[in-house]
Length: 147
Ligand SMILES: [Zn+2]
Image (cartoon, rainbow, N blue to C red; front, side, top):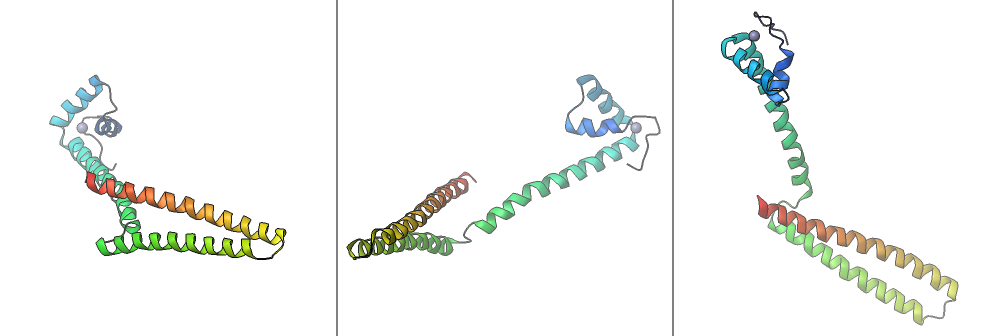
């Protein structure tokens, strides 16, 4: 702070006053002092403006991130949902077909174990991602309703 109080008031208290961190007695003292000290009023106004600017920035930031994540409109939302649905069907069909092919083929047991194990791993990861995705999609919708 560049200004100093002409009445010798401790301006470090202004920050605590704006934060509501002072005791009731100290809060009252600051309040009374601000009423008849223009210099401290100016400092307090400046602090308040800085505080509001910081708060606005802090609020805006996550909102920006959210917008980046979320589908922009009805069409992109629809196609994204459809995309996941198609992917789920594709994964199920491909896995089922591959498993059926392998199970009915004359390959030896080791090859079957390797392929089945890999597919099981991929399948589990895919299901986990899908479940998370569906859950977050539901949360997004809930959040939108709340606005
Ligand atoms: Zn003052």
